[in-house]
Image (tube, rainbow over all chains, first blue to last red; front, side, top):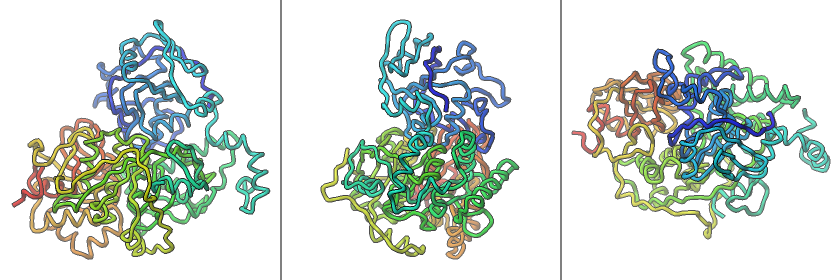
Length: 197
Length: 423
């Protein structure tokens, strides 16, 4: 996992509530087994019509937002299926930050496993961000969003912040403690896990 | 402590835990299927490149595998995923792999109870959001993403934030024709699709005590649709009998303390509940069937981990016996064992006589994969769990979620029908 760096980007406003993972990445793409490339299927049914032409009325098809890394959406983002492909698709498309008033549990957790920062903000602030989509800076170290007109603080669990900043997934974190684990296991009657590798 | 707190305390070796504590819990069982399995392998590939050893699982005897989403394979990519899954179980020495076309197999959440794969008091995680289903056996059961599952497969543990619990008390036995599905739809309609976010939804009260284990499974299954971390029912003699008849022994029942605390207690009177549906495009968009819009249905679908257990088929058969379906109707029993009982007890004959097509166990059209997906503008009534746009096929198709009785009654009339109103 790559360490999370400060991001300067315009905001893509997706003004919908309950955006579910079936919409983020529809079922027909779940069976694909390549490691990357899910970005082209992101929000597939919203981005493309039946003949696979781009729908002009969908925000991601507005060229203004082409290089955006920040998606802002409504309540309960990422609900539904646990498919981690949803996070892979958002990331592959280019999003590193998702802002919403609330997130679904499994989706929220999956973000941190893949280096995406989900930010929970009050409904009123999110609503202003739907309109104020100019370039903003996301500063994770200082936990602030800097817009041209103001600075918005956000909260994040200190452990989750650390893993994003250091680019560590859970498994990498465990192996950081390898010596301690071996030391513990040497004093334990339970057979060693690490030594079996 | 309540039941979830006690299970997580046991799993993490602590004498007591409270909501919001973070615990590192030992996992008793873990499940992957033909979507999450290949997903986990991708994570393994990534770890391997980072130099992290992935050649051994923590305990292959605690891992089990189901083929359910894309079997029978409709095209070569799905077929290749099944091969990948078989190689995975072979290479890692996993013996519990329920294979399509080789005896018992079916939807993973159905096998969790049909095959007694999970026991009361277990910490059970699966690579699928509806893993919550199995909490009906008195286990802590929740879904995880692929990376988390990969971690569990290698380490046998995972951290949890101890969830707060909402206790839903159902008072009194459900009236005839009102099923567990109606109750859980009503609850989701009341609290919303994020009403259970990060929390446990526990079900209790005399109405739940009266309920069969399979009805409780329906309740817990759809806690996912309210965003809950997990759903749970305290285990009782019914759970012991249910699992014993499926070969389980050695029960270690965990129940909440008399002074257990709940974040919220919400009560329902069974006598006030009615057959209920969720209209497109959200499980919270509910109405009682008698006030449902008058739409011409194209299809009735009785399938999935939510609505194709034996009891669900039995309920549908009660309605369909001696009647004819007016619209395309498919019934896909959720596991081979259920299919077989339906055959032995004459349910299949009732279905076939009514004009229904009976298909093999699979997640099939519930996730819009295959086996009867919907065309543009088609309208379906379905015993499944989600009705998001495009969930069961074309993005401009529509799905109404219902109980098996309502789906069967609607199959007979071609309109959304309360089973109490059938002639």
